[in-house]
Image (cartoon, rainbow, N blue to C red; front, side):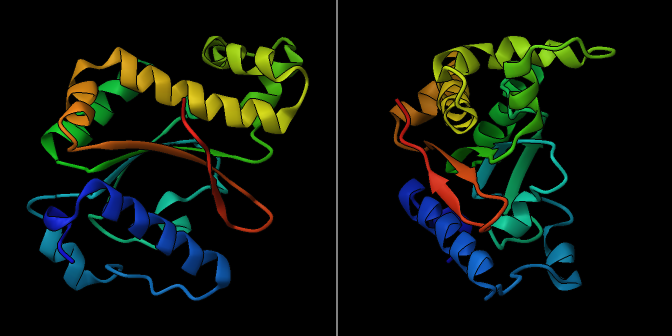
Length: 194
């Protein structure tokens, strides 16, 4: 089905179907060939936009069994919604027309762990903490809960900080979803957003 014809719920279902293929080892690697790259070289119309973690073990296109032009992916340690990320995701949804905006956390996230531990770190690494601190505090020492809460909070930030994104959601053109990718199983567990 062409991306332009998918409604947001069908687009979200396509993501989960791709993740199921990946986790079961039955990947189809759609749109991962030179013909597809040539097809999208002049324009793009991704069906989903992602706020994911920069962790090297979380390659979003592979985890969801997608290819060239399918996903608009932003990645930052701790999958936090700062101003630059929000602007990028506004572009992916408003200009490029993605029907899903997905916040993807993952197990054993180093940024969430570091925020919970609160140790001094070099350079500007600690600038991420301010975005994750609320999740860490609310989790009361439970790393998995902090990761889950961080997904919920970052989705909330995207919805509330961006009139562009909020307007698309209100018109039914966009759904915001979230989940936690399990590094052991390869499965993405959906997170209920508040």
